[in-house]
Figure (tube, rainbow, N blue to C red):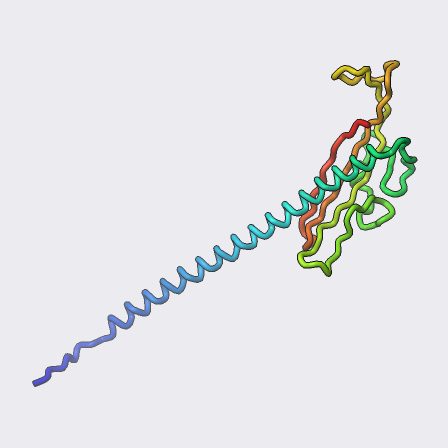
Length: 173
């Protein structure tokens, strides 16, 4: 003999659906968090690539300046400038970095290469001629060996073009 219960009202079904909804929301939240963290890691990688490109540009420009027996003219062409006057906009903010004639390009951004190469451009400003007496300290305008002080600004752009890093060094030659 079989007995049937007539008081089934679907409570287990509703409870099961509620648990399913809660688990679905938890899964969606976890997926969104993972996606955001992946984007953050990618952005940090692009920034590191731009930073390394800018650092490479500084070293390349320093090596180029060290290789000159006589410095070229700092006349505002080919990335070689005199510094701006005190209180005015700095040179690195006024340079058209997309122009190949206003900056020194050390490595072309070739977007056909996988992965794409970062863009590296520099400018060099002739700051001053200073006297070096051979000691560890530098004295201005003494009658000893003169050295040239240069300010090198390097700009690295990540392969995706979204991260830009600018670095500067003061170089004595």
